[in-house]
Image 1: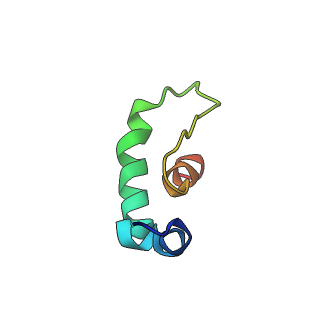
Image 2: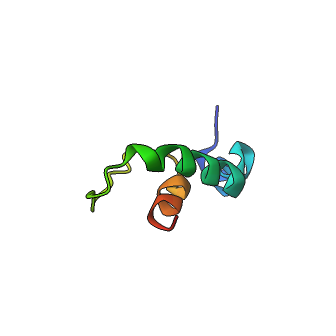
Image 3: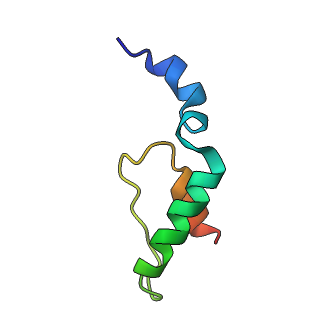
Length: 56
């Protein structure tokens, strides 16, 4: 059984970390309308990609 407390500590690192977040944000940014002022991050991991979207 997965121990979520232990997994949380290494979650981003085991999924590509900042380089993956940067690549994902770069792929998503062209899809976000220029007039958008709100993004909904719903159960999307730790929010690492969303943080990159708000600071391109």
